[in-house]
Image 1 (cartoon, one colour):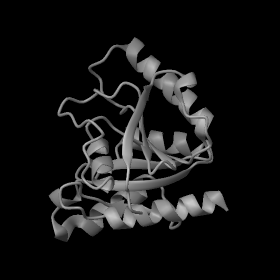
Image 2 (tube, helix red, strand yellow):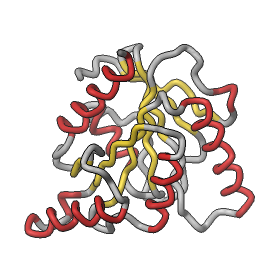
Image 3 (cartoon, one colour):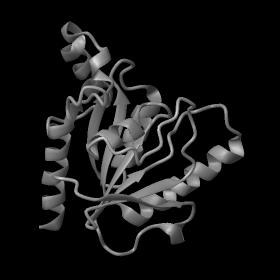
Image 4 (cartoon, one colour):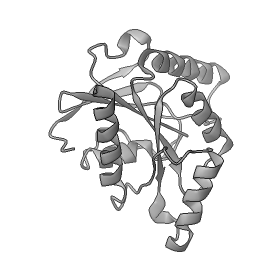
Length: 198
């Protein structure tokens, strides 16, 4: 997909902030500091729309971006960052519940995993939770450039095994730095969007 225009729309803090215009949505979810924003920016052709921070837990709302005036990217708050209050984590969880209930199963989800770390217990919980909505989930294993080539197949197999992915579930090694996986992820997204529109 050629991204001709991409603009930040709003930070959604409550249900009323979510788009209601029927345009398809692709939501990106993952642990704090896993590289979601970098992945999104790379998919957008290097545009620095999604804010990248070295400090985990900075995304505290659903940040919405409109692409080509025809679809949304949604950058969801990262999970698993401990240095916030329980009240704040509860607020984030409530916001996520509202977002998923409002958009799934129609939205496409990209679960972002750190290829160096593999799928953690929190990633496994997140996958099971998202799957419970009947959502289509694509998995992107980011930072793959930091994994030795001789170890990549084993790393991908471990992610697939730990998440109990079927062969039908798309798992894409991805690097925001080198661009590896960009074409594959866009192709998977386009196929899913076409299937949803049919």
